[in-house]
Image 1 (cartoon, rainbow, N blue to C red):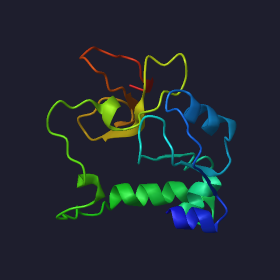
Image 2: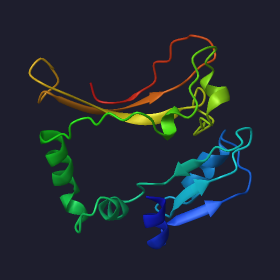
Image 3: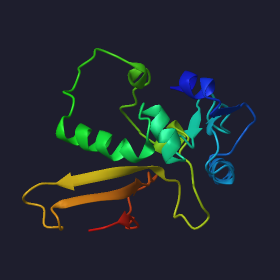
Length: 165
């Protein structure tokens, strides 16, 4: 993926130190609709990287997914929902190089960023959730929303979310 973006002239790499609290998101926001950003020197997280601005425009998304017309992206997504690929089991991979099983502290393990000063803390992604089916009561039996996850050092409830439902 990075090689593809670099070949397209859509990758900006920096080795300058950046803070995951507000600075990474500030730089990313300042370069909205610009290149994908690869931060390779995260303060407090040696050896970690952060990739931002991967999908800033429909045009970039179309290029990444090999679709000539950005308006056709929806059909690619619909086809993926109707024809999901079966899972593929593997014996190992990069995601299993470091396995923490005790005293897990996400904020000490990976560089979770804080997007804005108004956020209640650092936000771990903003995964999209798709719920559908006969038993789901939201019209028309479909929900697509953003559900950010906020890791915390001690248990507490955080109820901020966006999306329908």
